[in-house]
Amino acid sequence: MNQPSKAFLEVEGSSERIECLFNPAELTISKSNSWQAGDAKGVNAPALRFQAGQSATLTLTLMFDTTRTGTDVTRYTSRLLDLLKVDPDLPSSDRGRQSGRPPWVKFHWGDLHSFRAVVDRLQVRFTYFASTGKPLRAKADMTLKQWQDEGLHPLQNPTSSTPTLHSVHVVRTGETLDRIAAARYRDPARWRLIAEANGIHDPLAVAAGTTLVIPEQPVRRRA
Image (cartoon, rainbow, N blue to C red):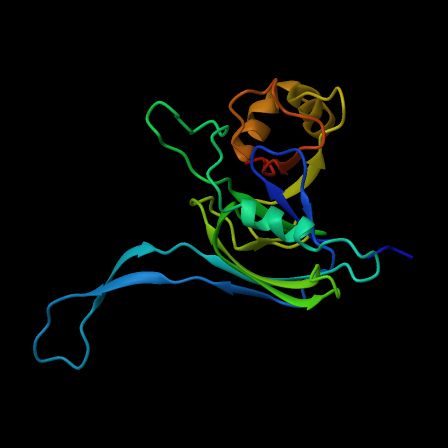
């Protein structure tokens, strides 16, 4: 009998993922486009001109409960709050120019994988405490906002017919991108495909435990 998959958050620049103690009960996806009405007289409705697509959002609620172990639940919620902090170690950060940003995250749950997103909103509510005041139960409402256009649907399932299919690979000790490409594509030269899909600038600096998206190669059809 297959064990149920546990949801987790992949964090840019970190080899440690944030495990969800309980899988979310529901996921809400929002996506909108921007249209502009043209000038028109004597008509019931003006013709609309497409301007641009808006960033998609993924909203979910995570539950944390440590009443059985007595562990302070902020051990888990603090990691979520840290996702809103600027990470000076990211490749795009420049301390000299005082420029930086928080990391992007990706939500994974079994075969479901979200786009790269930033934490747009986070609300943590502590709902149960020990007699000493130690918080033991919390509810975190998160809104993840699409970081950039990747041509992906808000949730991807490699077993479906959605575009840009991919699978996930967790880097093991001693593995390099070319070795992973050789195993996945039978061609070590295709390591650049993996690097591009994961925003990797230095292929030699991929730490063990890092979760990588492995894009599937398009099917070549003979004319």
